[in-house]
Structures are given as structure tokens and as C-alpha cells.
Length: 86
Image (cartoon, rainbow, N blue to C red; front, side, top):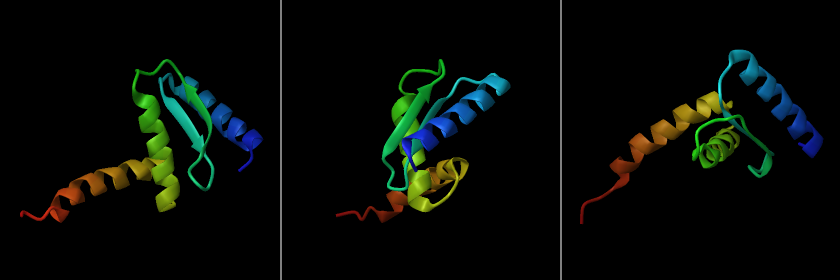
């Protein structure tokens, strides 16, 4: 993905968020998970890192960002099962 494509994706997502009247933080990453563009639309503080991690997770699992949330939840629920008492 080129920078111009990232800006176009950011613009489209921003327009949709404004249409829905929701405050969001939008992160656009390339196929390697590297941040290309970021937009914070009056959303709460502290969500920038979350938006970037969600976008990177979507790339890592090859899913849309909505599914990335499901993947993150599943991983967080599975991790305690890996802990072995000493």
C-alpha cells in the first residue's frame, strides 16, 4: 500500500465515522503492519495505541479490523491456559 492509498482509506473511514456521528481513532497500516496514516476524531485519549494494535492484528491474522477485535479477545482468554504452575 502506498501513502496516497492510506490517505484515501483514512479519508473514507473518516467520512463514514462523521456520517455515523461517532468519535474514533483510525489507524491504517501496510501489509507488514507498519503505520502509514492515523486519524483521531475527538475520541478519548489513550486509544491511539489500541487502534494501531488492532490494525496490526488484522494484518497479522489476515482479517478485517472488526474480526481483529475477536482475535484479540480470544488470545487474551487463551493465554492464561498456557501458564503452568511451578
